[in-house]
Image (cartoon, rainbow, N blue to C red; front, side, top):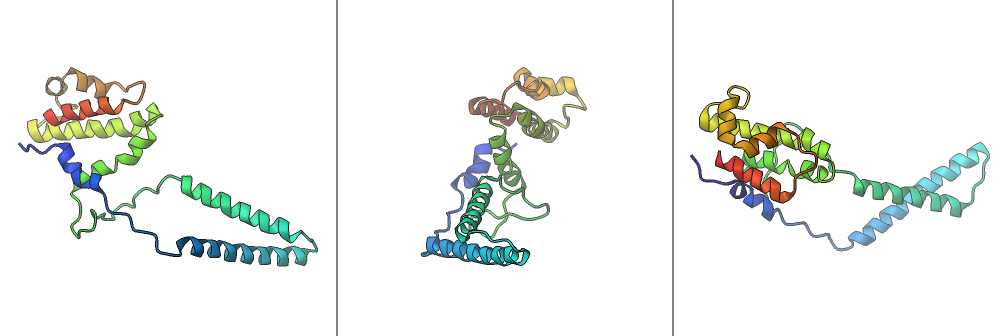
Length: 189
């Protein structure tokens, strides 16, 4: 048996890689890029509208294009991060060594946990099955059984609180304190 806790496994993740600093002139470069895109789109729109015989004020076109670009930028900033591509390796920090599979799997819970903060059904659909799989894996590794193969013995090993939590979906998303207690009970298996 190992005495490594989940906190020890996640220790390197909490430190996280240092953010790359924005190079000088980043804001100026961004403004110039926006102006260039705006000018190009306005030229194309003016040419297209004149080809059809329509005339629109240049100020209205520029304002419209800038509004569309602003909305596009805001929505891109609010979009959830894309899911990781299957089959790709991720690396921890600056080092060349890949993360261990447990650390990668657990770190992948951050976004689903964040999204389920106010949606209990998301917690029930995404997080609860993962916790059940984790409990089954610990039972299999330490005791040679899982909840499905020997439910009576699994219930005795898990304890009534953990068994109830895994078998009956909660009506609301558990608080971080409750989740910490559940994880502590999982570590005791």
